[in-house]
Amino acid sequence: MKSIYSLTLEEMETYFIKHGSKKFHADQLFSWLYEKRIKSYDEITNIKKDVLSTIENDYSIQPLKIVDVQEDVDVCKYLFELNDGEHIEAVLMRHDYGNSVCISSQVGCNMGCKFCESGRRKKVRNLETYEMVLQLLMIEELLKKRISHVVVMGIGEPFDNYENLIQFFMIINHPKGLAIGARHITVSTCGLVPKILEFSNFPLQINLAISLHAPNNKLRNQIMPINKVYPLEELIPAIKTYLKKTNRRVTFEYILLKDVNDSEECALELAELVKEINCYINLIPYNETNNIDFKRTKTVQIMRFYDILKKNNINVTIRREFGSKISAACGQLRSKKEDL
Ligand code: SAH
Image (cartoon, rainbow, N blue to C red; front, side, top):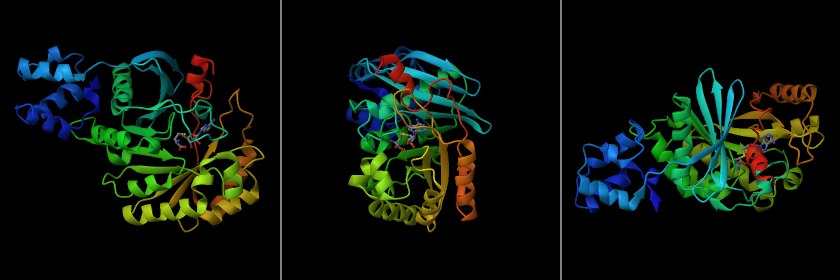
């Protein structure tokens, strides 16, 4: 059965009209789900019983299961079991500006980035919209605090699940839904060019991050197979088109991998590559995992890399680290659980 948490407000309106009922019930139902956070349709008092039972027959209100929670000072990691028994993860990070949650978008991932734990398991399926929405609702319920920021950077390639992702954005951004401002939502992609172009026409001002991780094709091909499909000479123009259409800024993520992409030449080449692009570069200290051989760049070298970019007038930050003690790097908690 489909889940009620996959529907946008407009879709609920269409549903009520189609069933000979009143459009405004959609507003009411949205408010029961996202303001009052009901667990059962029985709690609804202002929609007629016969209408409610039609909905109940068509749409489930069932939550997901949280099967493991690991806590550190300013980070908390949740392992979810989906209704078909698959597992995904979400991570809460407490910032001074609010609570940010990183959610998963797929079970497994087909992008095959060499350094990434999630990609060790091939994509099993896309997450349904409700499975993304419920990651947020259930964390808010445990936390008893509002989630102010959302990043789609957990397991999976969100642009490989584009339609459900867009639907998810519509629901969580809606003032009567979770009312999370578009500028507080970020989606990260490894660089699916056609979807970047499609996303440039999406009306909500959601932030776009690109996992770049290398300044040239030769190196990027080695660590990110997707680069053979969409090489830099296609990716960079697509990003420029996105920036032109949206008038926004893009974030480039760059994981520093020891002796792979962390040399001073790489820093210079990176500065050259992005110099005409309105962007931030976010340098990410690599979170080492037991199953993969890449090593983390030493802090002095991270600082050297950072300085070169700064000297070349690039906006650059080093990502604050959360949760390395609790396996918070992408895909690590699921791997532990399933022993993959
Ligand atoms: N598929 C999307 C989103 C998921 S990955 C993408 O590629 O952007 C989210 C980010 O985490 C990516 O930048 C990814 O490269 C990075 N990442 C993966 N494994 C990591 C690790 N072990 N340490 C640090 N960052 C990692």
